[in-house]
Length: 289
Image 1: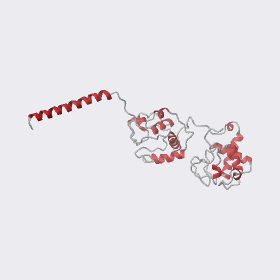
Image 2 (image 1 turned 30 degrees about the vertical axis):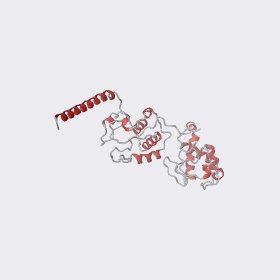
Image 3 (image 1 turned 30 degrees about the horizontal axis):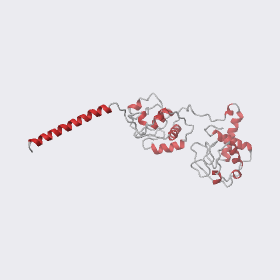
Image 4 (image 1 turned 90 degrees about the horizontal axis):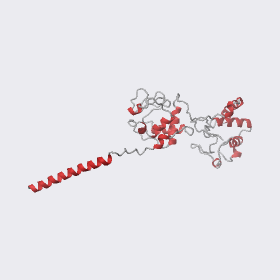
């Protein structure tokens, strides 16, 4: 290779270095004031939303928590820490305060706060927004209703959780001034056990028996429990379980919905029906018209 070739190589190398330096300089000027690109999971509205648990389904929340959280967390009392801490009793508890767990520094900055409904919502929506250096490699739960259900489940396993400020008083307002109503409610519970409990449960996470669970049915659409197969005659009832409809149903199920699956002759006593409906009303955490 003669001197001319060497000169060409030297010039080419110098040109390359100049181009690289120029590119870096231009890039630093253009990019230096750009803000960091947000995660695709980010949604600013989640940071400002206020939620309550009136629409919550704790049973669904338990299912979601088992599916999405149990790899890293346990939920039973005195459960062991895994990748993340045990979550029994977490609601109402101080943030980053479970013993024997090493929390991230950004989560420790929230130690003066508690895991209330709103903080749990923010955390579950975007963990890295709430605590940027968290070790929890989880993108969050994007659907608000799913977060509400999970939070409601966490509340059921948190004995010391405070009552929600937004929780609704589901008692009959007449109870406060009329002792007879309280007595009728107690009778309604007893009569439910006598007439209905063999086929129906009445608790938040009650199982399906011969009939569906009856927790929270007042003013809900008829034949709408997701884990029960209803008869065609009930599915045709495009109505809600109002007190009037419940009264007709309990009095004579086959007359009100011919061909339904409930093999029960009904309750002829209007007083007993009224007491049972009052009891069902007390189990339905919603606004009732």
